[in-house]
Image (cartoon, rainbow, N blue to C red; front, top):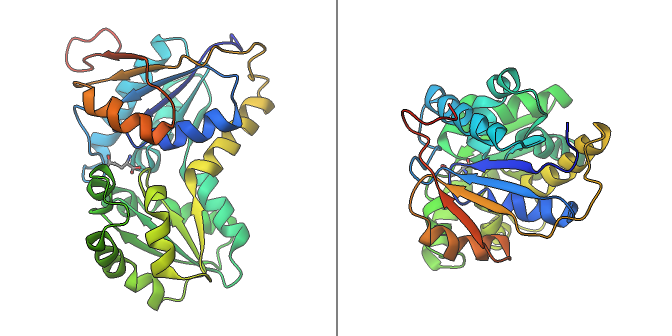
Length: 273
Ligand code: DGL
């Protein structure tokens, strides 16, 4: 394995750039290849079978680009497809569920954890399994928040409507007296302030993106796969649909310029599948 090869990272669309931003912070010398499945986003309302199929196609594409590891930045894809991906590819595959779940299990004092995520992620029960594999005594309350993704993409981060919706979604978690809340979707770190206002100071918010970046560093280091030379920072981006909005919004998500972006078709007849 070429230790100077890029790290592959993918998401249903733009949200995975929050995970990429954290990985760039943790591993500034690494080159990254990002795939955003704009043509088929969102994954959060799709069936497990469909998300597995899309994820495997993207992983094959990233492998064809010679990546040394794959980070599944999408919570929905991590929750649905991690096992299948690990069977299909020969490089380390890192998901976002376990790092966030482990951190939450470590910090909870009352053993009452909340998880907010897409409908599909909640339906898999992946966060509950990951938390309870750490400590089976922990009580987990899960809440799908499907309106959060479009609100973030609209830029309504502190809008009165967002606050109202957050109060509605988060009410069952407050009623269950959780002390730790996992932001289990790529977009939710942008709503941190609103979520904090609603949940109050006594609830610790866990950002899966930060935990995944730390996990990626640890896994690459243990596998002897950290790069030996400094990359020039020109990461490559691939998208499956027209990418104007991806670049506009993505540069805010990433806090960096998106320079090299290519549109490709992962549909029928593509050479990567
Ligand atoms: N990236 C997805 C996730 O983290 C959210 C957007 C979608 O539903 O595709 O679950």
